[in-house]
Length: 281
Image 1 (cartoon, one colour):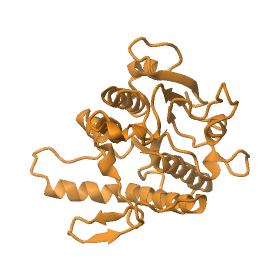
Image 2 (cartoon, one colour; image 1 turned 180 degrees about the vertical axis):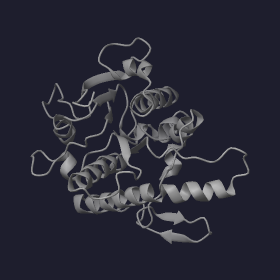
Image 3 (cartoon, one colour; image 1 turned 45 degrees about the horizontal axis):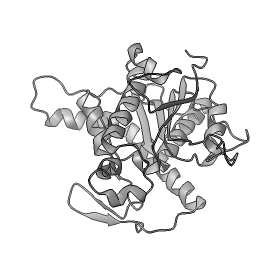
């Protein structure tokens, strides 16, 4: 639900990024269309399982690719309505896709589907395409998170994995890995720049607006939220996401240090897990 990510989306927009946020019909409890009509979806208490997650992810991938194809028409429609003397333009060559939880997995799945179409020679090479992706704390579903090479899982575009404290890494006490899909995905990124960072003190729901609300409603603390202060997490979250897109979409090399290995006194919450510069570096 896009309403849960206002703190991040508004920040990107304030730095000049065009942000297109999708609400997926039939998945959310309710989606209202611009004409005032609405569609009921899955109840908020629905018990998800892996088949449901895969079906929802497939729908999200299709929606994302359909939105790409709609961009030229969207630009034309916005230009026709604009009263500005400057022509309205959308940057249709430097586009990133990202999401939280299942949305992050869907971002990777969309890049894999795009790579598959490109290998088949399908589609128009001049059409808009995704040039970067990001998964914020979501388990990878489908080929992206599989522990075998039955299907290609190299997304072939720059990718950031941004997780909670300990996501995908081995617990020193139990010896268990919290999410095996993350190291599986990371091991197969060969072509392009990628980074894996975890955030010290964060838990799953901290990568949403709920992290800010926990500072006002202490009762929320036990609902998938970590000990990191909500206001500070918003600052960290915004900085890491923006730095990634600044590097891979805008070519601003000055932001790379935040994403690279090494201690940064200004960002003690940063946990470097891994990364690579790929063959296209």
